[in-house]
Length: 222
Image (cartoon, helix red, strand yellow):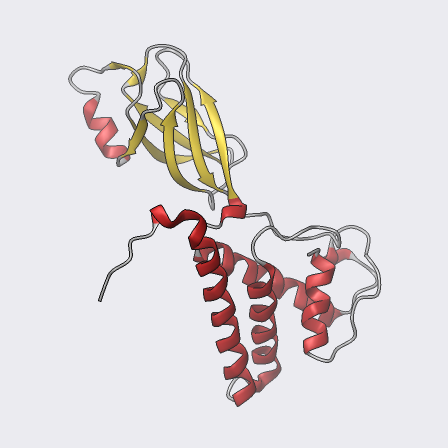
């Protein structure tokens, strides 16, 4: 669904006027939508972040391949942000999975002598110009293609035609619950019901996506 469609889905539940057509540019600067409609748009991005952080959604996963350079340990990960999460790392040629370790561990291994070879360990150790940086150990002794399997949350929606990447129904229900609470009905039955429906929608969406990655989930038997 587009940003406008999500906002309108919430507005209909609130029995408020929908936005009739796509606006131009960012919602906050648009002339057509009312202040209340803009507020609902803000809630969409707030709840979107909650939903994105609740699970490692399939729709947010991607691979970023970094080609190493001999004697270079640290690399910026392109198109990442501080919200990006690293799921796993693999060296392409041999298929070896790199083990995640603390940055302090990699620093300690450099002394008294440093090692070079095919990287076996990695750490996400900082941010450079808004991009996550990774350190590898051993220090690469040549060119290796390293696959970083990452979960990359979507930027805030701004334009009418921006399309939501994570599951839409939990976002709609979460915004509806937040809008009811904002109206001052947060102590009533309707607010409680809306919050419960949001949590149920989120739980259902997670369960559906878990089936695609069952190897990543540990089930505790009773």
